[in-house]
Each structure stands twice: as C-alpha cells, then as structure tokens.
Image (cartoon, one colour):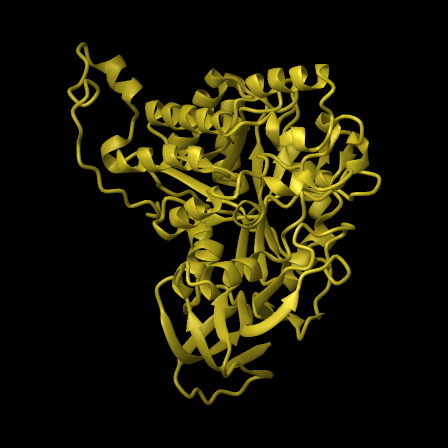
Length: 498
C-alpha cells in the first residue's frame, strides 16, 4: 500500500513546515514539496496539522485490581486510543509474588494477542526481585524487548516492595540499559491514615484524597530519587500529581540527577472539588494519586513548559461506575482505583496547552509522543515524522471542537471524567504503520492490526555518574570529594541512545 499525504503542516518536536509525505508500506520513504508520486491513496491535509502518532506510556488494560478487572481490554482500549490519535501504548504486565517475570509476560502477551488496534509494548510490574530474578530482568531487557520495570512504594501486601528491593532493581536495570518506573507514595503511612479514617466512620469517596496527603507522594518521590542516585541509575516517576512532588524532581534535575517524570491529564484539568459531588459521584474520580487542590495545576503546566516534567500519559485504568466503583459504596478504601482517559489525551492537551497558549505546538508533540519514544526505547521508529520511521501519523484538525461525553466515547466504561467538557483539536485521520485505521471518526482497521514492539535499551545516565556513589565507597578507602558535598557541573543528555 502506497499513501501520499499532501499539503499538511508537519509538526514534530523540533520541526514546523509544510510538505508532502510519501509512505511505502509501513514506513515513511519521502518528504518533500509538491511530490508527484503514484499512490494507492492520497490524503489532502491542507489546513491540518500532520503530527506523529501519540504514545501513551502508561495504561492498564485487562488488569485485575481490587476484586475486579479494568473495564477496557486490549481490543476496546486500543480502539479508543486510536480514535484519539494515539498509535502506540505501553501497558503493564504484572509479576505476582513468587511468579517468574517470563511467566507474567507470557500471560500479558496472551491477553493482547489478536486484539490490538495499534502497536504496543509492555513494562513489567515487579513485586518479587531477589538475586535469583536478576537473570530474568536481563533477559527481559536484552531478549524480550521489555526494558522498563515498575515498582511500588504503595499498596502494602499486594504490590509494595521494600527499599532494598527497589535499590537492587535500580542497580541491575541501570547497568543493563533499563529503567525503573516508580509509583512513589509512602503506602505504609497512607494505610495507617486510612485505618484511622475508617475507625472514625469516614467512609465517603472524598476520604480517598484526604488520606493520601501530598507529603506522602513527595516523600516517596524524594526517596526514589535518592535511591536511584546511590545506585547511579535513572528513575522515572509515574503519574506525578502535585507541586510538592514536582519540587523534588526539579531539585534533583538541578543537581544533575537523571530523574524523569510524567503527569496525566486528570491532574491538569480535574481537582479535589470533584470528590465533593453529591452522593457517591466522587467515586468516579477515585484514582491514585488522588486529585489535588486546583492551584497545583498551574505548577504542573510550568513543569511541562520547563521540561521538569517530560511526558503526559493517562494511567488509563477504567472501572464502571455501576457494579465496579460500587464495590466501595460503604468504604472508600474498597473503591477500585483508576479512571478512563486514553481516548481524549491528545485533544485535552492540545486544547489546554496549545489553544490556551501554555505550550507550543512543538512541545505538544514532544510531551505526547517524542519524549516517551526516546525515554522508552522507541525512537526514531516511533515518535517522529522522518524518512525511515514507522508511518504512525495523525492528520489533526486544530480548529474542530467536540464535547466529550460517555455517550459518544469508545472506551468500555459508563462515564467520562471530562463529561461535558468542550475541547478544540481533533484527530481526523489516523495511520498506524501506513494503514489508515481511523478516518472521519470511523474505525477502518481490524482487531489484531497492532503489533508488539520490542523496545531498545537507552542510556539516560550522565557519563559522570555511571557506576553509582555506593560503588565508589566500596572501591575507595576514603570518601570522594563529591560525596563530601562539593558540587560538579553535569550536563545531562537525557535521551542519548546506546
């Protein structure tokens, strides 16, 4: 199949120009002015933006949690993502306690097999990591194409791992070109606060937020960064929600520590007041971390503009209001944590960022696609428009407006967190590896069109810091000058490829 896209305004993380794009099969082969090439399909993109397909680096499809399973599986979730202009997502396989990572990965491959509308990869959630698991992590990175691993400081008894396990994982992953992603909240303290609230009869949904203070997130973020610094490894903070936590990331980056972080649309557009809705409505917004006070939103936008936050993902983990969220009607701690969002990420960020003049077009592409591709080993195959790259392309109408509603969305969930919100900027035509899968709002693909993508290793650690401070302590009889407090200028090249 040969496709020619004509007259579009091509936007990448660094470029802004009008050109034609010729696609032969799955890849972009020619970019130029006034191309006259024979094609099976010609798309006129005049007046439209031509951008790289979005990459959502944080989703939870078909995930067991809290006595139920997330409402979107790999069919409905990826189809919804495609409608919104996302052409690649990275989901989370989960290693249960006592299980091998290989077995867990096989389980998630089976969940996705033959269902996906777009390309996908996996992170691995690690709940058990002793010395015997080290060869498995190396195999994941070098043979299976799973180069990132999530660890939890929250959910004691289920997902939480201790600091020694986190440090061990960071050390191995860092040495092998992998990356540890941290759910950074002090879950042990949060659980104690939750117990006190329930003992006092505080059971409403709003107490989910009131028992998860921003200080607990900030403490977890700081601890994760310090452990990574000792290990000489990079760290990626997932779903950062508040200024208290962002400040810790900013401080680390100012010191030359390779700390990276994502935030999510819910923290940019929703706030604590949603928990105060009448009755049980607040349960729709029970997610972790919780929604914060509204003033945090401006700080997060500043973090995105200044590159203290690198990525916007969704943490898409939907549970239907009826039947699933209802599990916690009399106890907020039993409400399944998570909300829907994979379909509307691109439009929300374009509207809130570009239209509202908070970020540039280039930065919009960077935080919704390119940065994730670079951090997670997909670039330049994904995340840009260039000769040789996969033809994951979105023809984006920057003027069209729509109103978000559960009545019209494609996610398999009975409500929308953004119900009634009008957004400007819509994915009109979506191509995945050269094939048109969405056109004029209609899905034109087939389940199983998506392909598992093995990701490459990346080097996110400045050369000056490789090896970790603790290794210096082991090898030197005296503490280095750097460890005694003198500061060294470090230039981070955060996205260098291995």
